[in-house]
Structures are given as structure tokens and as C-alpha cells.
Image (cartoon, rainbow, N blue to C red; front, top):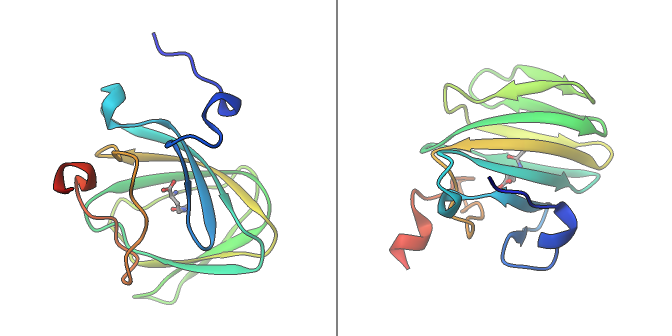
Length: 131
Ligand code: 9YT
């Protein structure tokens, strides 16, 4: 059994910072659970282009207000606490945070821990192995 607290991973390698978000990665590939699980904070007033070409991500909002736009269709979905969206079609999207958003995110395949988005909003597959 794995027991871990958010407090215990803050400021460690599991606490990843990007320009528009911080991702606290509670479970990673190295934990051998088959998925990764993150407590992610999206900074207020930001827009992030994201395209998980190699992963499926489920995102469950527990705090804040924002929206997600699917770039191919222009369809916009509001996000508030209790909203789940899942990118099961690897949709390229824009995530906008009106206020700070706190999201619980699950990735399959699991992230290795170092991933941040590239210029196209993509996470490479198996970043750690490529280093
Ligand atoms: C909601 C979302 O995809 N935010 C970007 C960060 C990502 N969730 C992560 O790496 O935890």
C-alpha cells in the first residue's frame, strides 16, 4: 500500500512547475499503479494550450472557475467544482482559468514525473527514459 500526503511532496521532484500551472504528482509511473494521479493548480487568468497525443487524461475540478475549449470544434465547456472532463479522444484544447483552478488529474499511461508541455502543448511519451 502506498500512503502519501500532498504536504510531503511539495518542493520535491514530484512538484512540477510550468508557466501557467503547478502539478503535484502524487502517483507516477515508478509507483507501478498503471496510471498517475496529480493535484494540479492552474494559475488564475491564464490560458494553456494542451494536446495529450500520447496520453488519456481525466480532470476533476475541486476548486475554481474556468473553461475548456476544444480547438477543432470551438466548443467551450464551463468548469466549476464537481466538473469532470476526460480527453478520451486526445482532443487538442485550450484550458482557461478565470480564478485559480484546482484539479485532480489522472493519466494513462502514467507520467514519469518530468513532463511539461512542449510548444504544441504535447507531453512526450516516456520522457525519463529518453534522457
Ligand atoms: C488540467 C491539465 O492538464 N493541466 C496541466 C497539467 C497536468 N494536469 C499535469 O501534468 O498534472
